[in-house]
Length: 331
View 1 (tube, one colour):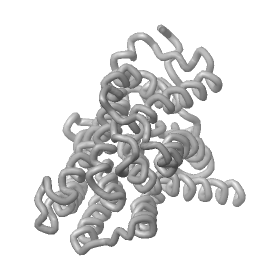
View 2 (view 1 turned 180 degrees about the vertical axis):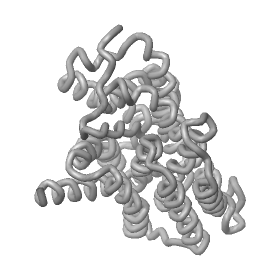
View 3 (view 1 turned 180 degrees about the horizontal axis):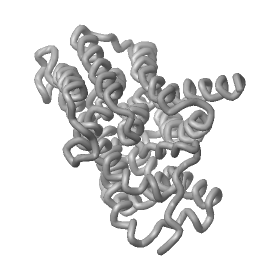
View 4 (view 1 turned 120 degrees about the vertical axis):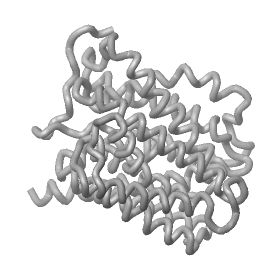
């Protein structure tokens, strides 16, 4: 039993490393002479659809085919959870810094709670309301701090990543309707597959390959495709089978720390006073929101803060198994 728990905690640490290093490797891939944001997005959508689709088919066979009646909902999830979500993140990262990205992604649970409360999936009480206001104060510092304004400096890039978090939070609320009927891998695979029709738009006029000799951009792209997209998913599922979901949620607080340390080592990026105050506000805000409820939507949102650029696995049921899909009406 102790070995199982140790394996789960080790997997969770590896997951946070995979996700925490994403902004750093993404910045290298998007640097001058590298990929354009939408060019890198095109690679990730194609690779995610191929890898996750193959895994879902191999694992579940015919069960991996969704019901026709659910296809419109999957299409909406593909738009919110991949096309808008990943596009906004990469465009924002290209205009900001890895440390800012690591902080802003902690807004996802706060946005998710607010949207869920607005559509009556959550009860809005004073404690989470205080958490939302505190987190938004931290976000405002990242957007407008230092007197640089919204467009100058990193403000505009931060703003795009805030929109990325808002898009992903909306996806999590909408996807709740699919969670009880499909296995998590099936949901993720189809969200990527149904994002493939956006590729012609993403690829048109974009830089799909780096300059000749720019091997660092290629290796960084390989990291973005392999580790946060596929390996971290498998490690996360391994961890969820061995530790409590609430324990998993605690580990997401390591992700901005990993991003910050990596950004400091790779680029010499330093934590400013505004960023430090913003970090405190964001962490206090997410703690208040997460402490107020234990709803699966919020649990997924807390885990989702680990990586705002990919759909999040569904929360396991009380029995410890992933949700099953409805067997009828397959395509």
